[in-house]
Length: 110
Image 1: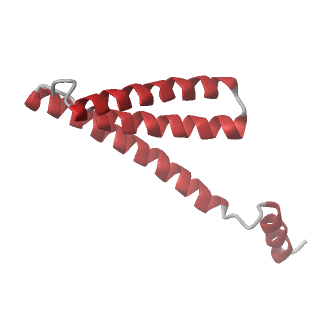
Image 2 (image 1 turned 90 degrees about the horizontal axis):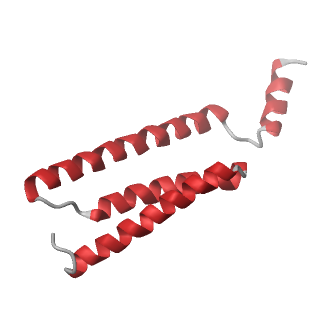
């Protein structure tokens, strides 16, 4: 087999997807998640120190991101522990959403 034949066969097997590009996107998303996580934690600390309260909206977004990631992993891999972790993050998302709505409505003190 020549180089062009091997390349054509690999492209057919991978359905035209560029594996290196997909890997770079995956790594980029992973790093972006941790950057977002770090920024939200810093945001919570600064608000807690400066204003003596934490806005639950950022935490809800953080939990929603983790919920989505683990739900997608469960759908793709069908592993029970991925579903359990997704459910835990889903419960956290709903909890922080309710707390955030209560803050916005003025029910909870800021």
